[in-house]
Length: 165
Image (spheres, rainbow, N blue to C red):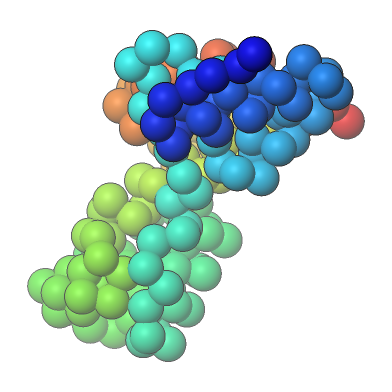
């Protein structure tokens, strides 16, 4: 008999059952589809894809968000993003928050984190190379952001989510 209490623990239980019946690889794939952390450790923060923020209605902001995702290693300061849209930094901050629901700086950090997560899952790149490719500047900054946002380290994340391929 398997039991759980609450929605999140029920999802953890369901993943444990998948792992028990079909193996850890399938449970990992299911967790990735659900955007969950497989068998979270106590106190581990739950996370979701940062680009799943409010979809927004402004085409200029949607295009900027796409551009950010394609240029993670670029200077993505608010002033540079404002220049990219030919608006003032203050105006960008105001319309971005209204459309996306977060600040441009927070969105950039989340987009960089998402890029780093994908590289950790799909490549054998070092933390320093991933930090550079995603605009974090150093492996230490990447580590700090992972700890703050996901409650884990890049190395621990890679161990749990590394694709079998």
